Length: 239
Ligand SMILES: C[S@@+](CC[C@H](N)C(=O)[O-])C[C@H]1O[C@@H](n2cnc3c(N)ncnc32)[C@H](O)[C@@H]1O
Image 1 (spheres, rainbow, N blue to C red):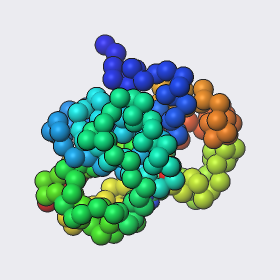
Image 2 (spheres, rainbow, N blue to C red; image 1 turned 120 degrees about the vertical axis):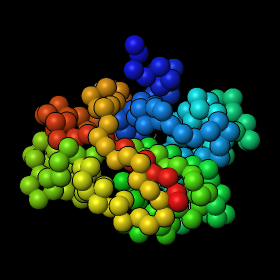
Image 3 (cartoon, rainbow, N blue to C red; image 1 turned 180 degrees about the vertical axis):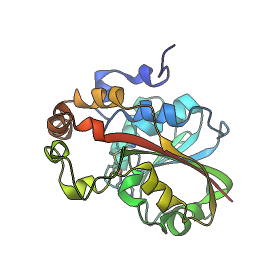
Image 4 (cartoon, helix red, strand yellow; image 1 turned 60 degrees about the vertical axis):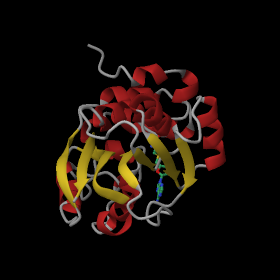
């Protein structure tokens, strides 16, 4: 059986050139296996980057998507969404800081975030104060982050330091760390925090890219640094 039947449809050089890290579509497909978000739901793709994950959510899952991102240009994303045949009703690009979201309270039915939450979600107050106010009661959060099999920040393996600084590695943490952060949240219940299966294949798609970040990541991964790394999924439901 094919592991990523939906993500495989996007495996073209042009679309893969838009990924900003290990294949986020395969991660998202695993993250959303058996998900509980109804078709037609209003979903925030939080940290949507160049919009590929947002297109995937709109086309493959039938959600109405707000593609919210800080660093990318929403006009570039808007053009990409039109090229992909999506309408303004299906998908809306928004320049937004995840720590100061510009939406009405109780706006979203759900939030999906792939390869971004580790930038802003490590603050234990983040969920209660900055994100959950914009999610409807009963709404789901599905989050996938790059992580570590076991936190080793006090004694970083030299392989990892071939590509990343200690400050960059501080964005990567293990399941126990994320459980510690997320369990302080008062306004949502934890449905799952666990290590994902996706690993080698999502890295392979990324390391093939010829952008400077992918090229920079090759040294650590070619030296075997991948054995310390994983991906972590977090699933929550707002009370
Ligand atoms: C590695 S990219 C992932 C993008 C996309 N989900 C994907 O996988 O292709 C991380 C994204 O997080 C976004 N990001 C980082 N800090 C943010 C913040 N405070 N608010 C909103 N987005 C943020 C960046 O703009 C960047 O596009």
